[in-house]
Image (cartoon, rainbow, N blue to C red; front, side):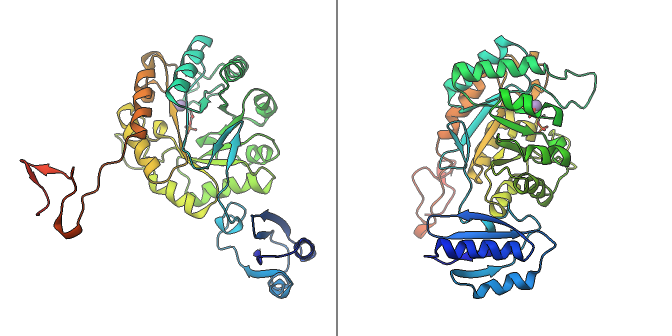
Length: 357
Ligand code: PEP
Ligand code: MN
C-alpha cells in the first residue's frame, strides 16, 4: 500500500502514519518531496484492512494499493524520478550520461589511452572489467586486483568515476575500495545472494537486465537492492536472447521506455552488448536516447582487433569521438502535414517533394 500525505501535512501527522504502519505489521519507506510525502508500507505479514483505515487519519490524502509486485522500485512510491550520483556525475537528471571504456582492463597503457580519449570526447564515466564473466573458461578472465588498482589510478588522475563488474560476494569490499559504481552483470541479475549483499554496500549499483529476464523480473531484482537499503540503483538494458542470429542480442528499446514508465529509477542502454556489432552502435545509441534512456554505456578500445574481450563490438577512439558528435546532431526533420505544405528539408524524390503540395 502507498499512503499519500496531503499537501501541507505536518511532521507530527507523518510520524503518526509511520507509527501506525509499523503497528499494522509493515515496514514504512518514506519519500519526502518538496510539498508532499509518500509512505510505502511494504511486507506481507500485516493487516491490509488496518492500513486502509489510515485513509481517515489526519494529513492523509489517499491510501492506494501498489499495483505491481515490485514496490519500492515502482513509480507509485516516489513522486519524482530518482537521480543517482556517482561522484559528481548525476544519472537520471536533465543530461544524458555516457559511460565508456574497454570491455576488460588489459594494461595501464590501454586503460589510460582509452580513458583520456573518451573523456576528451565527452564521456563522463569510465567502464572497465576487472572480473569478467566469460562463457568459456579458457577465455581471458580479467586481471582482477591489478585491474582494480589501474582503475583507481586512472579515475584519480583523470577525475573520471569508474564502474566495474562484481561477480562474487567475496569481492564486494575490495571493489568498493577501488571503484565508484558496481555493475551487476547480465548473468548475475538473479544472483540473489549477491543482490542482498550489494543492498548493504554504500556504492551505487548498475543493474544489467538478464539476457532472458522479463522487465518484471529485472525490476524485482532491483527491488532486492532497494528493499535491502541501497537506493542508488541504475537499470541497464543490454539486449535479450531472441530468435535473431545476426546480432549478438536484441536490444529491447521498448523495455527502456517501459522500465522508465514502471519505475522511478534511471535507465541506461548498452548498445555494445545489445547489438554485438560496431556498425550498429551509433544508430542504436541515438535510438536509445530518443526513446528516453538516461544514458549509454559503450565499449571502446584503442585497437579493437587486439582486444582480449568483445573486440568485435568495441569502437576505436576515433569512432567513439564521431559517435559523440553524432549524438548532439539534431534528429531527422519531421515532414509537415500542415495544409499540405512541406517543411524545408522534407524528403524529396527525383527533385520533387514526396508529399503533394
Ligand atoms: C560487460 O559489461 O562487459 C558485460 C559482460 O556485460 P553483460 O553482463 O551485459 O554481458
Ligand atoms: Mn563486454
